[in-house]
Amino acid sequence: MTKNPIEFVREVRSEVAKVTWPTRRETMITTSMVFIFVVIAALFFLVADKIIGFVVKLLLGIS
Image (cartoon, rainbow, N blue to C red):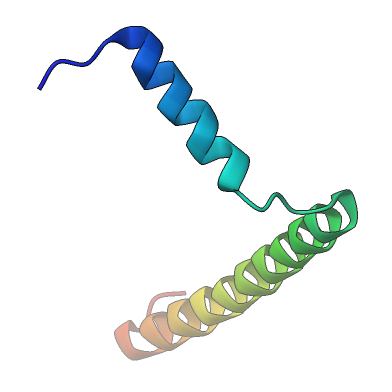
């Protein structure tokens, strides 16, 4: 199962050539969307945490 390192590098280069790489614009749009959804998720969990904390304090009678 051991392969010649040179053959391995040739195969890797061959496979990399088959990859369809995203354009700069596609990368920027995807990155922006990820950041937007991270902010939305963070705000959602912040609000959910505050609501759950308020309800727990109300139920336990903690000031």
